[in-house]
Image (cartoon, rainbow, N blue to C red):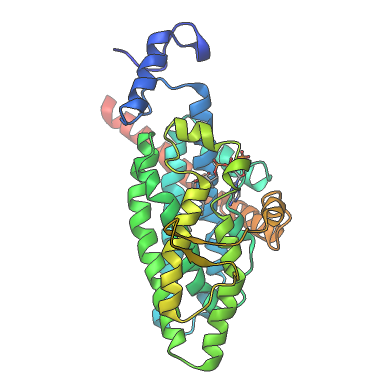
Length: 328
Ligand code: 3HC
């Protein structure tokens, strides 16, 4: 059966067979591919999520990138360099996945720097000292793993496949963060204080990465029905808390939540309520570093204009040479 975009009438311009074929693909846990017909809402939801995710990876280079020149040793500098470079790669895979849905990368970038598309709230917090690099690896990349491993089973093929490599790299990121913190905890009292201070500042924003609570998450139900998302925001947040508590104990730090305790009956940790008003403020552009992050992205985009022009001219020249070669 032809399931490509060319189609007749009905919802989204599709006949009932195409709609049924799409729904059967989702029900059978098979992948939707770029060539397949898909409802317009599914396509738009994917572009929204994938673009936000790509922007998060690219903006996420900044908080840690600021520490590359100030890393305390050559080894730490090399690790941090590799990590920040990985984030750039993740952004590029994700923009490519968005392009398979008909989005235009230049347009997505414009939307980001004009504040018309979102990126993760977590990257609007400042990095005060080098322990923050470790805590970002441990918490932020740890939260990313919780959120993104299930996305390897997302119903849209290019997104799911891009997540496989991204998750492998995020694992390395998390471990380098934890290893850095372990080293600092074996160091001086001043270093241990730095680690605890960073933990105290990053814990609640990390819980907010998973999004608003389920009862205030307008997109979750449909995204889960389409199997774009496999778990709700609260389920993933709980998974992150359960995973992180024993790691904190092993490290010798306390998590800044007096309500945090094991609940035998539920088989999970109970924990306090994040400040949802703060999440809303940060998402709507009023976080501690929003202006700085977007401004820096805008400058980098402008400074890179000549590279894009040169690459485009080079590609056009190569294509012309290939055409001439084909004619000769
Ligand atoms: N930061 C910014 N915006 C957020 C947010 C957050 N932490 N949480 C939710 N939002 C936004 C949503 O995008 C949505 O806005 P929109 O409708 O205008 O797009 C709105 O708040 C309501 O939230 P919902 O829960 O209804 O939205 P979703 O169902 O899309 O869920 C999500 C939000 C859990 C972030 C989901 O989009 C998702 O899983 N995305 C993929 C993973 C991702 O983007 N991760 C970014 C983390 S950064 C990262 O991984 C980089 C690594 O290097 C650490």
